[in-house]
Length: 177
Figure 1: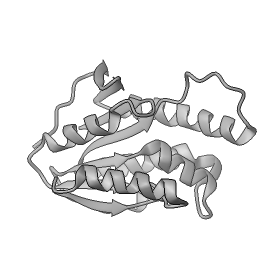
Figure 2: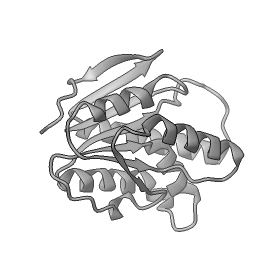
Figure 3: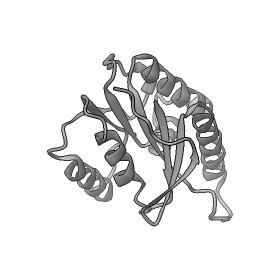
């Protein structure tokens, strides 16, 4: 099963995705993508670690090259938190996929699915702002749109979380034991 969980900032998407991943009685992996840059990113990382503390997740830190992650645990569940952060890393960090970032992340997600994992992928909805962006941000938004559309096409379930409420756009989550 591949579930895509979308939402805006502070929408409840991470909490929903985590609950979905925990609904399966299986080994749980948390693929953490945030790179620590400053005190604010450290606070966000600490908040997410606290959210999943004592919930049985094995953390896999991965800021780049999702396709290189090898878990190979049939029936387990992996929570990818989050695709939009991973995209920013791939676009901006040395060694990232640059212009091929969306394709590289999709290849990584498909690789994890081929390893027999149920996947819950979190991504941001940044498309309603309507702001005048810098060229770099315009490229990020373009690639995030491409990535989210590609993930949605592959997904069994696409859910948008708004004000903590799940709105199903495709399927319903059915994790495989």
